[in-house]
Image (cartoon, rainbow over all chains, first blue to last red; front, side, top):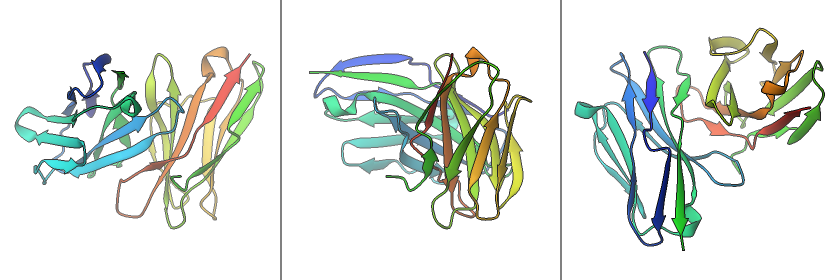
Length: 115
Length: 112
């Protein structure tokens, strides 16, 4: 079955610290996509990254980086040198391409960056 | 701005009533998804349409229905509303042959 688990419900770190948000997924498919979305206090959902199951290369975008490991079914997200503006709820999500490609979300991790 | 437009942004209505939420996808996107975000349930997938046809169904109640019109905009109809239906309802769209979904700003529904 398709499932995304974000075990960290809430995390607080002091500004400039690095923080990693964990994501573990379950799927029966060999072809799938993984996503991260950010939901700031204003409420909108902001797309951050999409990664397909055949591309295990880590990705870096500025202070953001993602570590995809199929062996452990994990797709973790790290923010380096965190800033107060990073405070938000972060969602990891999964879509099974061979089925109906609906996107299933984890319950989210609420990240507080303290000044 | 994701390019996905949802109206209205806020809606307050009484129990037992019926409301319609509207979504205009990004230009060229054929898929429309509806999600419900409540405090205790997270982001729940409701339903997906692709080019006017229902493609996938999630945890959508029988009191809820949706459709996608020939111009690709979509409507989510919620009827016999209950207090527990109060939530943020998101619409998302994605281009053909991709699952890169872009979300609208959401409609915050409050049932009183």
